[in-house]
Length: 248
Image 1 (cartoon, one colour):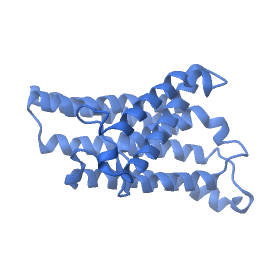
Image 2: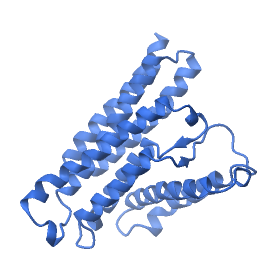
Image 3: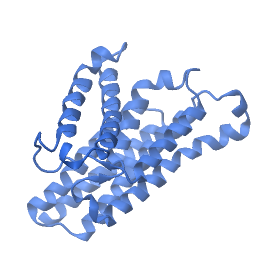
């Protein structure tokens, strides 16, 4: 029985991704983000449980990738798809063609997430660090951003072209050759300065988000803090990749 426990946890991740996708298509962004977070929690523990029970195997690896593709690929794509139906369109895109086609470009995110997961399974370099943005971080960023900043994203200050270009940027981050932090093992200031700085700043962003980012509710502010933390993760990872290894 114990060999099935990690796979059950992985399936819980998959179910969370399905519910998040359903919620996104029904414009329930906060519910979608909640289930993406819950899926990430299950994703964190399934591998640890498999190693603790000594039952790691190829089935678990493949199932984990499939679940991640739904929770961290399809679900955020569904959120972006729905947002495209509410976002403002610039005058040169004010035609029926763009109104019909642009929402479906959101599923590029799901495709790039699948490529990212396949690369991760095959890339031997990613045992100690990530190469490219991890799919959970990408999904959490979009879930936090859309669920807390919908009013701004659908205002005249933002538009469908900006949303498309922003999405393409994150699609590239998923498959780029830029090393990004992986929090595996113990941290030491001498070699993990950037990681420790990131953790401290992220804690401040999230804990104070309800007061410094939000004018509506503490939860919305926390979500904005989470989105800012993921952005900080990307920036510091890129900066660290250009530093000599002994200065990290």
